[in-house]
Image (cartoon, rainbow, N blue to C red):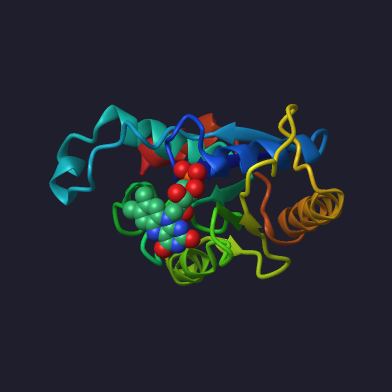
Length: 197
Ligand SMILES: Cc1cc2nc3c(=O)[nH]c(=O)nc-3n(C[C@H](O)[C@H](O)[C@H](O)COP(=O)(O)O)c2cc1C
Protein backbone atom coordinates (compact mmCIF):
# COMPACT_ATOMS: atom_id res chain seq x y z
CA UNK A 1 0.00 0.00 0.00
CA UNK A 2 1.36 3.43 -0.92
CA UNK A 3 2.02 5.93 1.85
CA UNK A 4 0.87 9.47 0.97
CA UNK A 5 1.90 12.74 2.62
CA UNK A 6 -1.32 14.75 2.84
CA UNK A 7 -1.03 18.52 3.16
CA UNK A 8 -4.20 20.46 3.84
CA UNK A 9 -3.94 24.18 3.10
CA UNK A 10 -6.32 25.16 5.91
CA UNK A 11 -5.65 24.64 9.61
CA UNK A 12 -9.25 25.31 10.69
CA UNK A 13 -10.56 22.38 12.76
CA UNK A 14 -13.79 22.48 10.71
CA UNK A 15 -11.98 22.95 7.39
CA UNK A 16 -13.96 21.77 4.38
CA UNK A 17 -10.65 20.83 2.77
CA UNK A 18 -9.78 18.61 5.71
CA UNK A 19 -13.24 17.03 5.32
CA UNK A 20 -12.57 16.46 1.63
CA UNK A 21 -9.19 14.89 2.42
CA UNK A 22 -10.84 12.59 4.99
CA UNK A 23 -13.54 11.62 2.48
CA UNK A 24 -10.82 10.76 -0.07
CA UNK A 25 -9.02 8.75 2.62
CA UNK A 26 -12.16 6.66 3.15
CA UNK A 27 -12.46 6.05 -0.59
CA UNK A 28 -8.78 5.07 -0.70
CA UNK A 29 -9.03 2.56 2.16
CA UNK A 30 -6.83 -0.47 1.47
CA UNK A 31 -5.08 1.34 -1.41
CA UNK A 32 -3.44 4.40 0.13
CA UNK A 33 -2.27 5.20 3.65
CA UNK A 34 -2.78 8.91 4.44
CA UNK A 35 -0.17 10.60 6.61
CA UNK A 36 -1.43 14.10 7.53
CA UNK A 37 1.40 16.63 7.74
CA UNK A 38 1.38 19.40 10.36
CA UNK A 39 2.24 22.67 8.61
CA UNK A 40 0.98 25.09 11.27
CA UNK A 41 4.08 24.80 13.48
CA UNK A 42 6.55 25.73 10.74
CA UNK A 43 8.34 29.08 11.02
CA UNK A 44 8.19 31.45 8.05
CA UNK A 45 10.83 30.54 5.51
CA UNK A 46 14.18 32.17 6.25
CA UNK A 47 17.32 31.03 4.43
CA UNK A 48 19.48 31.97 7.43
CA UNK A 49 17.72 29.34 9.55
CA UNK A 50 19.53 26.57 7.65
CA UNK A 51 22.57 27.34 9.84
CA UNK A 52 20.68 25.61 12.64
CA UNK A 53 17.50 24.17 11.05
CA UNK A 54 14.35 24.26 13.21
CA UNK A 55 13.18 20.85 14.44
CA UNK A 56 9.83 21.34 12.65
CA UNK A 57 11.62 21.70 9.32
CA UNK A 58 13.76 18.60 9.86
CA UNK A 59 10.62 16.72 10.87
CA UNK A 60 8.78 17.89 7.74
CA UNK A 61 11.60 16.85 5.42
CA UNK A 62 11.80 13.41 7.07
CA UNK A 63 8.04 12.92 6.75
CA UNK A 64 8.12 13.78 3.05
CA UNK A 65 11.10 11.48 2.45
CA UNK A 66 9.24 8.67 4.17
CA UNK A 67 6.27 8.72 1.75
CA UNK A 68 5.62 7.44 -1.76
CA UNK A 69 3.51 10.36 -2.94
CA UNK A 70 2.05 13.73 -2.01
CA UNK A 71 -1.55 14.94 -1.95
CA UNK A 72 -2.39 18.61 -1.50
CA UNK A 73 -5.95 19.59 -0.62
CA UNK A 74 -6.34 23.33 -0.37
CA UNK A 75 -8.71 26.26 -0.27
CA UNK A 76 -8.26 29.23 -2.55
CA UNK A 77 -7.30 32.54 -0.95
CA UNK A 78 -7.69 35.62 -3.13
CA UNK A 79 -7.29 33.64 -6.33
CA UNK A 80 -4.16 31.83 -5.16
CA UNK A 81 -3.00 29.36 -2.53
CA UNK A 82 -2.89 30.21 1.20
CA UNK A 83 0.46 31.56 2.42
CA UNK A 84 0.76 28.76 4.98
CA UNK A 85 0.72 26.22 2.16
CA UNK A 86 3.34 28.05 0.09
CA UNK A 87 5.57 28.18 3.17
CA UNK A 88 5.20 24.41 3.62
CA UNK A 89 6.09 23.83 -0.03
CA UNK A 90 9.15 26.09 0.11
CA UNK A 91 10.89 24.60 3.17
CA UNK A 92 11.35 21.02 1.85
CA UNK A 93 12.57 22.38 -1.51
CA UNK A 94 15.77 23.69 0.11
CA UNK A 95 18.76 23.81 0.60
CA UNK A 96 19.29 24.12 -3.16
CA UNK A 97 19.78 20.67 -4.67
CA UNK A 98 18.38 18.91 -1.61
CA UNK A 99 14.66 19.08 -2.33
CA UNK A 100 12.86 16.10 -0.82
CA UNK A 101 9.98 16.63 -3.23
CA UNK A 102 12.07 15.49 -6.21
CA UNK A 103 10.51 12.71 -8.23
CA UNK A 104 7.53 12.18 -5.94
CA UNK A 105 4.16 11.61 -7.64
CA UNK A 106 1.63 14.25 -6.57
CA UNK A 107 -2.02 15.15 -6.92
CA UNK A 108 -4.07 18.18 -5.97
CA UNK A 109 -7.65 18.87 -4.94
CA UNK A 110 -9.55 21.73 -3.40
CA UNK A 111 -12.83 22.69 -1.77
CA UNK A 112 -14.54 26.03 -1.50
CA UNK A 113 -18.04 27.33 -0.92
CA UNK A 114 -17.83 29.09 -4.27
CA UNK A 115 -18.63 27.68 -7.69
CA UNK A 116 -15.05 28.00 -8.99
CA UNK A 117 -13.98 25.05 -6.83
CA UNK A 118 -10.48 26.51 -6.21
CA UNK A 119 -9.63 26.47 -9.94
CA UNK A 120 -7.39 29.55 -9.68
CA UNK A 121 -5.47 28.20 -6.68
CA UNK A 122 -4.97 24.84 -8.38
CA UNK A 123 -3.74 26.59 -11.49
CA UNK A 124 -1.03 28.25 -9.39
CA UNK A 125 -0.11 24.88 -7.88
CA UNK A 126 0.33 23.55 -11.41
CA UNK A 127 3.11 26.12 -11.84
CA UNK A 128 4.73 25.61 -8.45
CA UNK A 129 4.79 21.84 -8.04
CA UNK A 130 6.83 20.92 -11.15
CA UNK A 131 9.29 23.66 -10.14
CA UNK A 132 10.01 21.92 -6.83
CA UNK A 133 10.33 18.52 -8.50
CA UNK A 134 6.95 16.89 -7.91
CA UNK A 135 5.48 14.78 -10.71
CA UNK A 136 1.94 16.13 -10.85
CA UNK A 137 -1.04 14.15 -12.11
CA UNK A 138 -2.76 16.25 -14.79
CA UNK A 139 -6.20 14.67 -14.84
CA UNK A 140 -8.73 13.86 -13.50
CA UNK A 141 -9.25 17.02 -11.47
CA UNK A 142 -11.25 17.77 -8.31
CA UNK A 143 -13.01 21.12 -7.98
CA UNK A 144 -15.23 20.54 -4.98
CA UNK A 145 -18.03 22.88 -4.00
CA UNK A 146 -18.55 22.54 -0.26
CA UNK A 147 -22.20 23.40 0.29
CA UNK A 148 -24.18 22.64 3.46
CA UNK A 149 -24.88 18.89 3.43
CA UNK A 150 -21.95 18.12 1.12
CA UNK A 151 -20.69 15.58 3.67
CA UNK A 152 -22.87 13.10 5.55
CA UNK A 153 -22.60 12.38 9.30
CA UNK A 154 -19.94 9.71 8.64
CA UNK A 155 -17.74 12.09 6.67
CA UNK A 156 -18.56 10.66 3.26
CA UNK A 157 -19.35 12.88 0.29
CA UNK A 158 -23.13 12.80 0.30
CA UNK A 159 -23.80 13.05 -3.44
CA UNK A 160 -23.63 9.56 -5.03
CA UNK A 161 -22.40 10.74 -8.42
CA UNK A 162 -19.66 12.94 -6.96
CA UNK A 163 -18.60 10.19 -4.55
CA UNK A 164 -18.33 7.72 -7.44
CA UNK A 165 -16.21 10.20 -9.41
CA UNK A 166 -13.94 10.77 -6.42
CA UNK A 167 -13.50 6.99 -6.15
CA UNK A 168 -12.41 6.92 -9.81
CA UNK A 169 -10.03 9.82 -9.05
CA UNK A 170 -8.47 7.80 -6.21
CA UNK A 171 -7.91 4.83 -8.53
CA UNK A 172 -6.26 7.07 -11.11
CA UNK A 173 -3.99 8.53 -8.42
CA UNK A 174 -2.97 5.00 -7.35
CA UNK A 175 -2.18 4.21 -11.02
CA UNK A 176 -0.22 7.47 -11.29
CA UNK A 177 1.92 6.55 -8.28
CA UNK A 178 2.54 3.07 -9.69
CA UNK A 179 3.49 4.49 -13.10
CA UNK A 180 5.65 7.46 -12.13
CA UNK A 181 6.93 6.75 -8.63
CA UNK A 182 10.16 5.13 -7.62
CA UNK A 183 10.26 2.68 -4.72
CA UNK A 184 10.62 4.58 -1.44
CA UNK A 185 14.03 4.07 0.09
CA UNK A 186 14.13 3.27 3.79
CA UNK A 187 14.52 6.49 5.76
CA UNK A 188 17.58 5.10 7.56
CA UNK A 189 19.27 4.42 4.19
CA UNK A 190 18.57 7.98 2.99
CA UNK A 191 19.93 9.47 6.20
CA UNK A 192 23.05 7.27 6.12
CA UNK A 193 23.73 8.39 2.55
CA UNK A 194 23.27 12.11 3.36
CA UNK A 195 25.41 11.99 6.52
CA UNK A 196 28.19 10.23 4.57
CA UNK A 197 28.14 12.92 1.86
C1 LIG B 1 -8.35 35.38 2.94
C2 LIG B 1 -9.39 34.59 2.20
C3 LIG B 1 -9.49 34.69 0.82
C4 LIG B 1 -10.41 33.91 0.12
N1 LIG B 1 -10.43 33.96 -1.25
C5 LIG B 1 -11.19 33.09 -1.94
C6 LIG B 1 -11.08 32.99 -3.36
O1 LIG B 1 -10.29 33.67 -4.01
N2 LIG B 1 -11.85 32.06 -3.99
C7 LIG B 1 -12.72 31.24 -3.30
O2 LIG B 1 -13.39 30.41 -3.91
N3 LIG B 1 -12.85 31.33 -1.95
C8 LIG B 1 -12.10 32.22 -1.28
N4 LIG B 1 -12.18 32.27 0.10
C9 LIG B 1 -13.16 31.44 0.78
C10 LIG B 1 -12.54 30.09 1.16
O3 LIG B 1 -12.28 29.34 0.01
C11 LIG B 1 -13.49 29.33 2.05
O4 LIG B 1 -13.57 30.06 3.25
C12 LIG B 1 -13.06 27.91 2.29
O5 LIG B 1 -14.10 27.22 2.89
C13 LIG B 1 -11.86 27.85 3.20
O6 LIG B 1 -11.41 26.52 3.27
P1 LIG B 1 -11.56 25.63 4.60
O7 LIG B 1 -13.02 25.39 4.81
O8 LIG B 1 -10.83 24.38 4.24
O9 LIG B 1 -10.94 26.39 5.73
C14 LIG B 1 -11.29 33.06 0.82
C15 LIG B 1 -11.19 32.98 2.23
C16 LIG B 1 -10.26 33.71 2.89
C17 LIG B 1 -10.14 33.57 4.40
